[in-house]
Image (cartoon, rainbow, N blue to C red):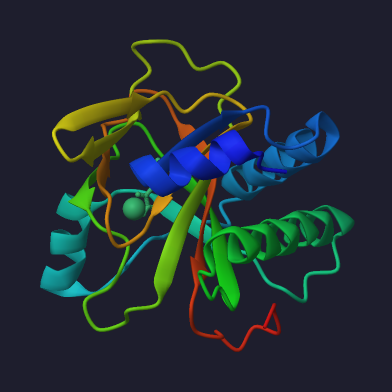
Length: 203
Ligand code: OGA
Ligand code: MN
């Protein structure tokens, strides 16, 4: 899954980029699923609140999401969870991270959506350890926007959201943002967590 070079990079830079991470059939099936969710209008506004809070959220992030269920019997989703389980085991063996669970959602950034700079650990919930994003934009070209920008120490790393590209980083240590998307942008985003989330996963 990850080789020693990848693990070193993640340890030293707190960040890792990988191309062609998933087998093509699995990647294509996941992308097809994401596209269907958008077409059928099944995604929901992320971090939604009401009234003033809704307006504030919209200024911070404009994506919509669909959370994956552990119990989903779709073989594509089951296959994906199997990969995530294996990846989790590998990360725990390499870093003694104490990953005990994971949560994932598909994400769709409509034209004009962005996500302002942030860390992935919530202030009141100190449980996200590693962030993982699979990009699904096969036709992405420069000018389409929606790049991930990582503000790592003094460097700024720009990651184009290309098809079957994965970005991983330490959820607590890496400040990052998503630049405005000028074309619809699809991803599958998740977090390996230190607390069991009660979803029947891992531990
Ligand atoms: C997030 C996030 C980055 C990306 O959902 O928290 O930062 O590139 N996503 O989609
Ligand atoms: Mn984030």
